[in-house]
Image 1: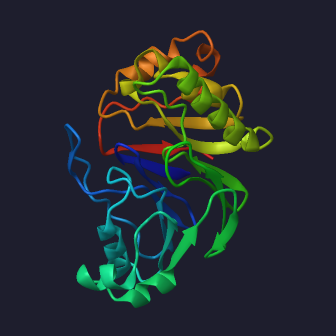
Image 2 (image 1 turned 90 degrees about the vertical axis):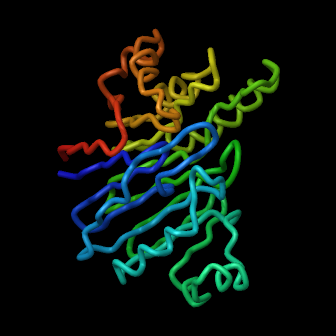
Image 3 (image 1 turned 180 degrees about the vertical axis):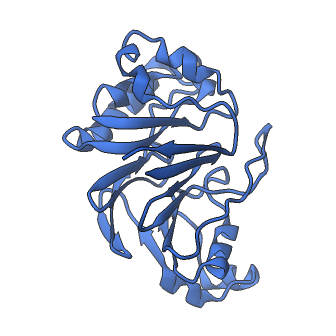
Length: 250
């Protein structure tokens, strides 16, 4: 049994038997024209905690995640290299630069190991990286902002993003991903489900959690009805509110 908590937007807590994984956590508050209400999760202090930040955008990363180390001395951070962490910046914000000893800065298409957990990164189509996390052979994927973006651009530009997105997710076509956190962004209009559609038709996956929905949770049901997705609808998890918890059977 493992537990997945959707906090808000693209932030998820995954609690496994041996480790807890926290992805792209930001505190509740205002982002763009939205107010996120997800509460800061309580995390079991008896297990290692790995805190991931896929990139520096303020709806995916906040410096305050470093405070999790105060609650759990067995906390480690995995941040994309575009996250700002200079010594002066840390001191100015009340953090000892020695905290960087707990931080692994990662680049795209690279492999790492932190606290016995294997981490592979993919190149984002926007900023930073996407994560493939291997815990004892169980794979968890968090896309960050790796997606088929086409906001306000020409069809040609949208196709460019589509090609780049498909190139990256092909790295997983021969893997079986247990938990996947994948962008479904309503701002894309007709292209909202392009990325999700390509993902479920490329990557073998047991549970797909839509994210980056800007609180428009009804788009999940719409996406599941698409002809190219309908055969995978039972794999796509229904999310209807912030701070919802899912118990996933092994």
